[in-house]
Image (spheres, rainbow, N blue to C red):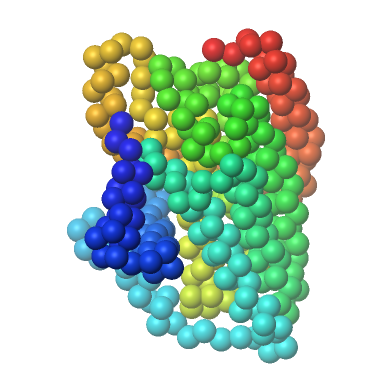
Amino acid sequence: MFDFSNVTIWFDALLRQTLGLGDFWSILIECILVGVLILAGYAILAICLIFMERKVCAYFQCRLGPMRVGPWGIFQVFADVLKMLIKEIFTVDKADKLLYFVAPFLVIIASVGTFSFLPWNNGAEVLNFNVGVFLLTAVSSIGVVGIFLAGWASNNKYSVVSAMRGAVQLISYEMSLGLCLITAVILTGTMQVSGIVEAQVGPWNWLIFKGHVPAIIAFLVFLVAGNAEANRGPFDLAEAESELTAGYHTEYSGMGFGFYYLAEYLNLFVVSGIATTVFLGGWAPVNIGIEGFDGIMNLIPGIVWFLSKTFAVVWLLMWVRWTFPRLRIDQILKLEWKYLMPLCLINLVLMTIIVAFGWHF
């Protein structure tokens, strides 16, 4: 398996030794380059996900989806982005201007920050702290503040109600998400994202195989809670158009709304990427213990494995969205506090017992 850290070491040596740059300029250039790559990847994936959502939705509803702008409608997303960029950005009367403009940036910062934790390949981790799982959940929680501020600052009672419902939903389901990640941490013995993936390298070492029943339960609960955390159907109550116009971002136009729209789709990818990283081996290839087969699988680049698994989970979550009807707020909270939370706690104890007695594979 190719180690991407060789590329970063080579580039660092190019700046320091070949070009003779000092520590300050070398680190500055590297940080700028990494930041540009993150934002470019973020934008490209957003375009792919929006187009994919439309086609998947059309497939389930027996229609074609976008077809007119470019071959198979592939340029429709670019047309929508252009339309959004040229739309006027306005503020409503008596709105809190500072909070109104800060809120979309908090949501996009949380989304990009969480996106930066994803391990794309062996040695290709942008943020790789020894407490990476803790920091990942902390950074993702910033988005809740952005959603609440959007409704509060808009001076719109419908937006306030939607923001309160959205904040309650996100905070509630973060509990189950955190417990599922802790279950994986107990099994692997590390909170470092790269360490969790490396623990899954080898024949049948993915956590859903290695941790058997508790890991499978944690994976399924993570998908449900992650779907709710990403504001996806059937948990998209924060944007229940039929009840609260457009929800917490009703009073936003242009790219103010665009940031929320962008973050929603990338949060879908982030949730799927975290599920892939923690439970499906991340960039680790499929190994079954047969030398010839494993050798061929190891030739496939890790980023191909990671993206393939992640988009498979994305497709599964899109399938869920366009299959089940939207839930009420009482049903959403009941599902979390009466079913998922107790299940996660029991599952956490079960995983602890299995690891303590060495009953895992």
